[in-house]
Image (cartoon, rainbow, N blue to C red; front, side, top):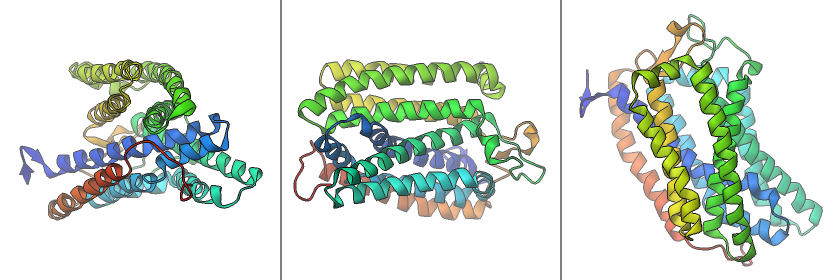
Length: 344
């Protein structure tokens, strides 16, 4: 079997897909969070600042989702087929939410009427909230397990996906994105809006900590395979500790006016959460519940070794390009938001 640095190609692709989806969570997470907080502002100028804070980067952030989906299709086509067909309605709703919020960003400033702008403000915020919730619901179902038949095809319905645990993970994801978005908004704003955002950071941290605490307890009590993995590998607690320390460092850095460090801490927390999730799932990609033997793993759902090898070479070229594009965009549009005639 082909190996690189002691890891087989299947494991390498598992890590690569995880890296891409983690990049998406970090980048699109804050602009979904800004959208979720959008309606809490009261003046048209403040709402314009919020939109322009993410205006130059939101579409580039979503490239990571497309790249992650492409990597999943290339490396684990059975997973792609099962998840995208079984979660079809949920993914359609996610795409509608993402498209509608994009339309809202572009259309909001096309007319000066108050009702027109309020309509698109609501669309932008609701689209962001729904997208964040659905992403969390998808993650919750992957963790909980979904019904798969002997052909490893989804055997449930849309309502099956809306179980209490997945909804709880959805709320936790929304809280995480709101915290991440509030920190980003602090970095990009000035004046009274900046001061208001600093207060929102603490509120969103409290919201996330409560949601995360409840979700952790539910996971340990009602998701036995994840609880068993933690008991079998106690060192996983060290990753959870990194997450907690990163979250605790956010208000400290905000208090010291080190907004950039606070944002980095939030990113570290998201990486820790995704790493913990990936390690607890490995080698499963889609866990079958209750028939565990029908689960899709990195071995029974993978492409051929030759395909994995060829696609890895392509990924080694493509991923650095995406990373370079992302870094350049953030460098070009660094600094505080200043409204002008070309702003949204």
